[in-house]
Image (cartoon, rainbow, N blue to C red; front, side):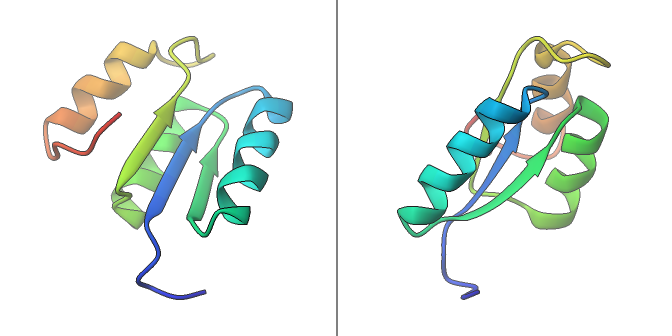
Length: 79
């Protein structure tokens, strides 16, 4: 996988939606990371520093708005 691909993080607890988006984005040349919870998503965000985050606002462990607040503490990455 090339490092010059744009990186997208999908934070989505519905596996069907996450898999669909991942497949579509990879087919269009993006490097994609996924997380099934807010906690996992924030971890993946710190590890991979994505260029864009696709975020489900209704996650099981934290509200999506709380995830945005955490991301904004360190980054202006589009969500």
